Length: 95
Image (cartoon, rainbow, N blue to C red; front, side):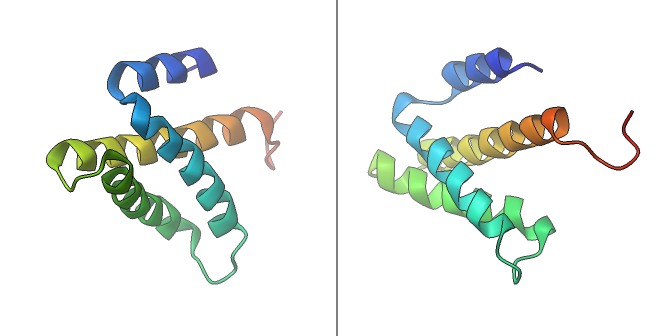
């Protein structure tokens, strides 16, 4: 999946008002990653909960639509981070 595919996916399913949630979650995720007390496996769960809460705030209602948008925002932020990491960061054993 390319960056343009990710943007097309975001534009297709994510409402415009929820796009800011993706950006905020990327920043929050980077901060959580640098926090030694937070286990790496818990970061996607924390981002999902935060995404739902932020979407409720941005959309102005606690609704199914806002919950779905928050979950999608967390998924796009996590997928975007992993695509970047897996593409550009060298790992041990890579050729």
